[in-house]
View 1 (spheres, rainbow, N blue to C red):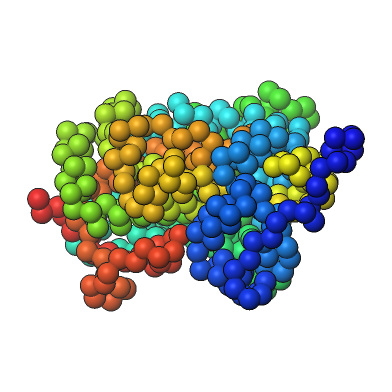
View 2: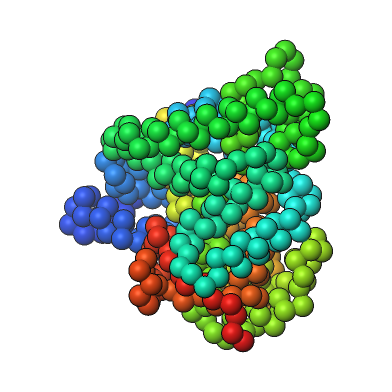
Length: 444
């Protein structure tokens, strides 16, 4: 530690933010609305403070200054320790749990399948398949939480990773993605969660099918020119010796399954808010009525659809914070932070700063029509820096297409599982686990 750093205040000098009469009560208040809690702490203490989280006092960093620092200094953090659960679930080559050169190599291998052009080339197929299944479901009750995730996985099996998978297995794949996400950030409860017999069997079924698909692909004489094949070619070009089988299984998982429920969540919130706002629904319908869904450039002509998705990403992010383990000492906000410090990155705090997004708690998609760019270093829905989500391009294609098809062709009556009408809830960060609607052909 240099002399200048040694003179700075340390971790113990970082102010503690607490609400209520105790750390435990403060954490309970935090759980009710994490974003608002972090925002109040930020207004009082700035971009760095400490607060009680679960069973320990954590350093919290949030806001645009923190985002820029954390995303710029990627090698400060150990993803292999904070994201160990991903490695346990998806295998040792899972991109989210890799550091340094291993992470850079994995992203290089995956890039041919996740860049913008490979995502966009499937727009016509995605549009046709999704519309056909929506039309088939019309008139009945549909659980949108499961419907979108299934559809995204199904389309991937016809386009990005071409293979024959029965519908019941596709449904299991989508369900496993959802259930595995639910256990990734548990602490003491995680062993019991992942050892449930139903979960163990679900995971076994899914990975047996991934093994089968991989074996068929490697043995095939004629290879489909899809995203997965592009990944295999990139591995052959950049690695010596036999192909890394565990790595390929993870590549297949990422191409076929990963992100399905996050995109479903994004789509569900877009539908819920749009249909709650009749004036905005009318504007979207005026925009999409001239869209045929086949021209890959057509999304550029749907600024209000894209603005709706952008506003939902801002207003209803799927992730509120990400944990970080510092592997090197650093300075931030006037404090010297030693290696080994555990940091909570309040990754979406900047999305709720009223000086950047006026009326930040309101659904105002017009803001992204008037100004299509996000305020710099604010949007954390897909992370940032070297670890930004690989599936971003796919999600930002799939969600707008799904929303466009929904508003162009269908009306939604929000119900319970038995068909009784109910109000739409907006309290949490995710819609209900079961999000039932009666799907009806558009009346006007």
